[in-house]
Amino acid sequence: MWPFHPELLARAVPRYTSYPTAAEFGASVGGADQLAALRSLPHGTFVSLYVHIPFCRDICWYCGCNTNRANRTDRIVAYLEAVEAEINWLASHLSGRVSLSRISFGGGSPNALDPLSFVRLVSQIVTAFQASTPEISVELDPRTLDAEWAGLLGKIGATRASLGVQTLDAEIQARIGRVQPLEMIRSSVDLLRKSGVTSLNFDLMYGLPGQSEAILMDTLEGALQLAPDRIALFGYAHVPHLIPRQRRIEASELPGLEQRFQQAALGHERLVSAGLQPIGFDHFAQPSDPIAVAAREGRLRRNFQGFTDDQAPALLGIGATAISATPDLIVQNEKNTGRYRMRVLGGQPAAELGVRRSADDQERGLVIEDLLCGRSADLSGLPEDGDCELRLKPFLEAGLCQLENDRLTILPGGLPYSRAIAACFDSYRAQGAGRFSSAV
Ligand code: SF4
Image 1 (cartoon, protein in one colour):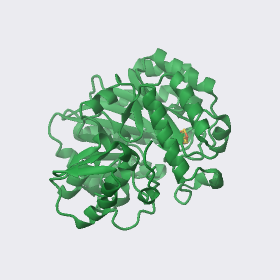
Image 2 (cartoon, helix red, strand yellow; image 1 turned 180 degrees about the horizontal axis):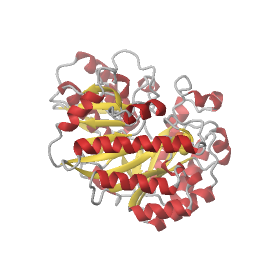
Image 3 (cartoon, protein in one colour; image 1 turned 90 degrees about the vertical axis):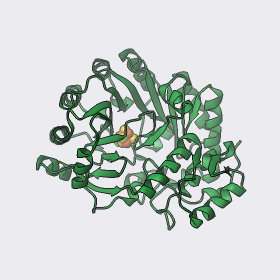
Image 4 (tube, helix red, strand yellow; image 1 turned 135 degrees about the vertical axis):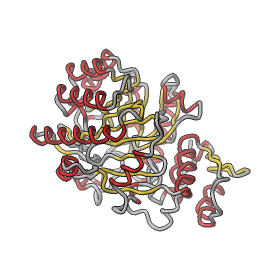
């Protein structure tokens, strides 16, 4: 079992899906910078595309995503018109010069769209980017997944899917505003397997209201019986001051830090004992899944979608809130769907915020990514940094990591402290971290 050091988990830290994190994005960087970065991508660069669909049939109370109820067809049609305009804008600056290797649809719930609109969207992208056989992955809500939708995933060649499962406990489902019986999940899995999905992920959560270790274990057993290829086991982050919809969740029913820690530990132990390979600090995969192979071969990466085997050096985000990244620039699209639409239909770039990645950012970002993906990083490229050494000291003294010849390694007991250890190298986190969540 992992050693529990509450004082080392007390500081709220980012999830580091990028470095610098979104907290550092500012209005001085935006569309013009994105355009320059796109134009400077070398010929033949592999790019991955992420398309944000900000609609869901029902809104779950815990959800921190930028999404809205899919109850007005006119809003969805207007949004997709804007997305098409952005696709064409990007393609006009890139087509023929880059190679589109992967398309990911997330949100929100892409399957809140009607199947015909979704197929049309995929075909617009494939045509605009002259993509031959991109790998396609889709985040799905089991509550709106039917045979027609699963069938079209087969037709467009989607091989990767992620289901929002969270918990199989009916009472907790009611407490978080997401009711989906086990039979619904089972039927979704059957439909997706028949449609040709070979890498299926379940998102699960610990730290939910009223969740005990026994309830979490029941969910893990039920999930394992459905044999997903991957499981992401996240801790629920309760931040109602930032996400008002979370006010519907009863804070007094949430497990405390020590309970959360034990739940994460038990979950890790159970999933590893079931033969899954731990990936990063909160993912697990069948050893034959591409992400597990990538982790063993040192090719695991971390981007805005979490841990990934995607090696593309440029990520293009399409849609409201979507984030794009190249080695020296990160930009985020306008978050409000109405203003996003006005921008792109007016011929402007959708990006409105961002940050340039300095050489120091890139070096620190690499250390953080290596620590989170492979639990080890070479520090020799970093400048002398007394603050960083001070922040790292208690983790070294507690035996959670070790430093030898400029190589920092997170030891097995240090795994749940990975984000906190990585945060020692974050030069922007020296003061305060009010908008982030607990490291476990
Ligand atoms: S289905 Fe997913 S994206 Fe939609 S509200 Fe629920 S958690 Fe959020």
